[in-house]
Length: 149
Length: 260
Image (tube, rainbow over all chains, first blue to last red; front, side, top):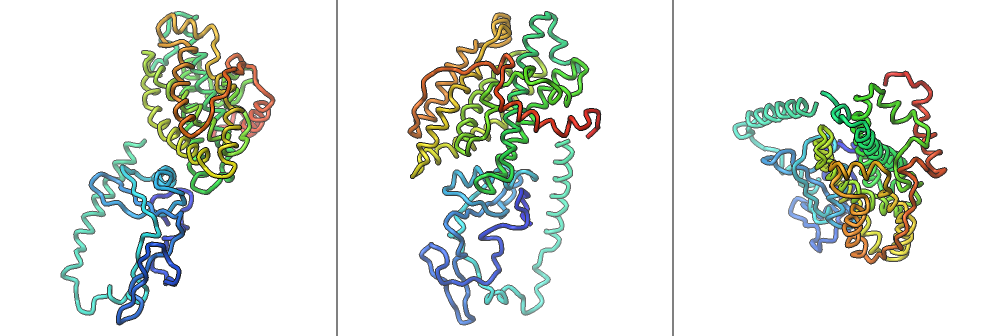
């Protein structure tokens, strides 16, 4: 599911599933090869096709840009033009970013265990901050819909 | 709220302004339908979605202008949009032509959006409320339509292989019909004389040419000879429009009284 909506909900192409194990061979064109560490393959270029652009949507001016999905385009301007209708139709947007997906590097599946705490880290999870953000966002969305009607 | 037409006391002036509103609505309805024919057939999924979105917006604009007439005259909007004979439609022939390839659609979009944006500015300056305010608001969406059209045009026309030739041929096909957008009727003279429309159709056409020329020539295209194909503004249409109208109104005609 792509947060930005649009017609291709559910099937972002190229960069959609960044956790999928990738074959580093031939991946990407950044000139930066995949790297191994002691635990195995650790990071690699995503290996997207040349014409795939990752789209980031900013809902409000103080929000971060959030990855929404991809478009195919020959250049950045066309990518922005197409991203506008494909990822901002259903939710508010004040700004778009596009970046060539073949510039994106990803951590590998082999490295996933690095993200799992080995001891109790609940003291720094920051759940209440996330809860506050959810409340803010839901009230904003409600207000937006009212205004829209 | 009393409509714009009710507010015009002089019957001749009211009829002239009604004709302009009908032109705008018919232009948008017909081009919106043509654009919608790309849904599922666009050159790529992203452009397919974008063009479908543009089609929806043009139909939305058509509705706004039909409502201006329908509300004042106690008509049903759908009946006004779908329930007329071909000769009662006032759109220019450019908008009814078949989608003869993506390049034709893109060239037509460039030519039409430049016209439409200028026309909305004229309406916004007409002093006729609420139309003036609505026109001002709608220009916001036309900006993206123009951006989409120009972005595609430059890439097609500057492309390798057969791109430039095909775009040039599309331009030559569309140009006489595009000049037909500016076909004048007695309504125009009256509206200009009364100060409702700030410039004559011929002055609008000259300004439009100066707008589209740099875009077209900037990507290596040559402007065709200036012979307009008129008729649309007087209800004279091509067989393409008969087919379009037949298809577009098929569902509505199956039960004109239905509430959707």
